[in-house]
Length: 102
Image (cartoon, rainbow, N blue to C red; front, side):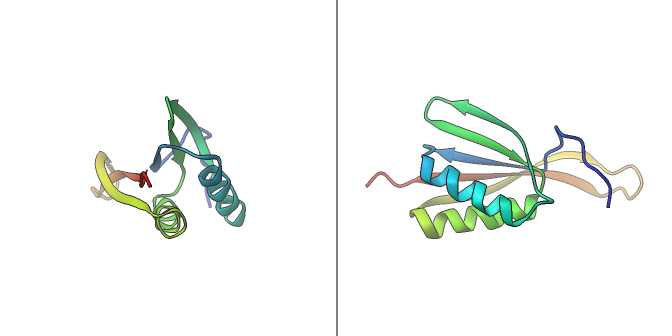
């Protein structure tokens, strides 16, 4: 398996609004999968963007957030590049989790 650069990311998890419980949940999930790492985080007021190195695990975390915290979940993808060797399109995933206001 190849080593990935520290700024490499395949997915963004957007938490709107971010709470300490959600952050603990995500960090605990990432401890279970050492091959997945957080590239960076960006704070936007009470919202938080977390850049992850795995699209598939970002989807898993998003589904777990929906079950645990009762909010709205949306997946979207954006074309990032095209692989020069295989000509396959490479996408970056955005997982938006919006907490219900109850």
